Length: 389
Image (tube, rainbow, N blue to C red; front, side, top):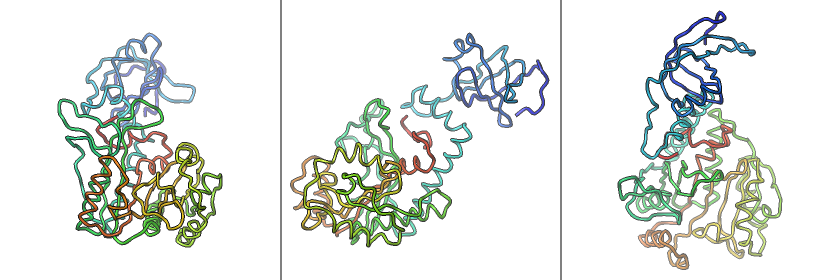
């Protein structure tokens, strides 16, 4: 920033527009930031011509705001370069949001923080003996979940809505596998849903949902040791207690197994499948503290192994600030017991099981939601370089 300024001092300044809000434009040249103040007529003139990311030349008069911040009243603004749009899928307005997120100092810090988090997650699984795999982001036929897929302009390719089954295929010859990466779900224009997610999936032979839940908490401890604000305790309760308004018992991570077994033993014999939508839309969002919810009706996780004597499956969700961070289970590996499931995704999964996969656990990790909880950002898509906006 300019430290000393005389009233009505003239200045010619070349830089990139890094932020716009009303009459104020932040322009940065790499060494300092100058704030432009535009009159209503200037705002109307430049609103559609100069967006975040544009490189401009400004001639004007310096002034000092009431908060002692230097600003520039422009006499003339020349557009030197338009902001470049990195992908065909990104509109001009979305490109501006991406640039704003990149140049804003607070969000830039969170950008690096999110990148660090992803690398810690990957390193954690490497050290746990998991093989990291990579599967195609594009497909030429409908694939995965029962959602609409994005098509790629001028091609017959579709973006994947998940990489779950592709990753599981490696279990045919590998005991532990994981994959992180983006998935894309065409859900229409909505403030409630984003259409791009950064997720992780990990799978391990001869482990059950308790082993998987323990590993999730080990990952939390690793993130906390790295300086991320992760709670040291977790609330534990079962699905029935959750839909009936309980908040659970708070425990240390080390007592997890005993608490899970206790929660399972307290599952009622009644079928609570009808509460699925209430749980997803209302109950889950009520859990602001770190919480693990044990057991679920089979309709929530139809490929999970059933718990004996009750209409529930060996399933868990770790929820934080109303968002599911981990969702895991003991998988049913007998294709005959999954014969009642219909749809292309289940058909492909049963075909995979017929080749022979030992009993195993699976966990989905929403890196997107975890970054939201850690950074406090309500919308974090711009914190990751991406194909879609």
